Image 1 (cartoon, rainbow, N blue to C red):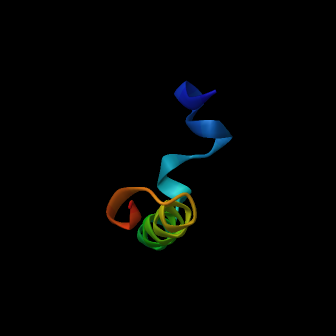
Image 2 (image 1 turned 30 degrees about the horizontal axis):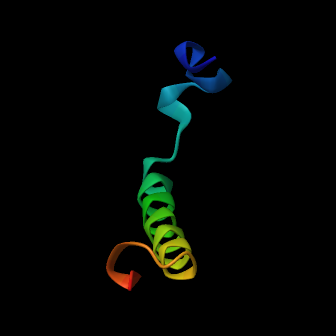
Length: 43
C-alpha cells in the first residue's frame, strides 16, 4: 500500500502538517518515556 502512496497523491499532501505531526510525535514519545521511566527519566 505504501508503494501506492497510501492512496494519496503526494502533490496533494499538506507538507506543513508533516512538521506538526513530527512535533506531536516527539511530545508523545516524551510522555511515554516519562510514564515508562525510559530515556532521561530512567532511574
